[in-house]
Image (cartoon, rainbow, N blue to C red):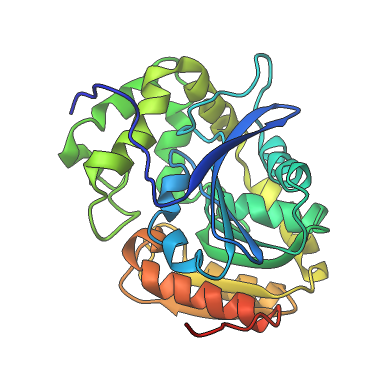
Length: 300
């Protein structure tokens, strides 16, 4: 697969906007109105991860979907800014502040779920509810399946070679790439284009991801886990029952760690539940937010 023309991005997420933060510009898309929901994806994907879920929620809620600087973003962080785990979590907090969002439902997946845990452990003021889908937690940051990626990030030139190899569709279904993230192949026309092209074509975008990968360590999630019992606001753990990367045992541990948590296991899905089971995930999020905000749905 060789790309030509402008980067393909899903139009399902709404109007594209930008906000300037101290470390750089964050591009995001927004759709709908009502209680705010902010989505946080993981490494080497972007807001398109939520393209099937947002349309199902935008009739009730204000859905805000940033492209976080985790390797599939189009605008690199400012020159001289080195992305670390804590800085990535800080970007989420500063984003909420910049948009003056309050009582937010924060939805995290994969690496993004680990970052969300750090946010609510350290600066939870603007977060009203937390939704964690299959994600890093406790000692699994990174999960064992990503150890080769972590090792590759330390070898100059190797991250580009690994990403470039994923131009070939069969290699994208390997466990080390996207094969264990979804049960169903991710379409090429929009999503794989938007996930892979930024890091392949812009070395500064690729370096943002490499910097974060080098800093990933269980010390961050274990430290956050010690403070999670202090987050008494509502939490939904919506985990893929068949997940092959993030153990279901962590879903149970998280549900026991938070004092006000609901656990839901999602059938027939791997890590990217928004890809494999968008209707189920959207239904869970919608019911969870309505139940914990007093939002009433008006028929019509």
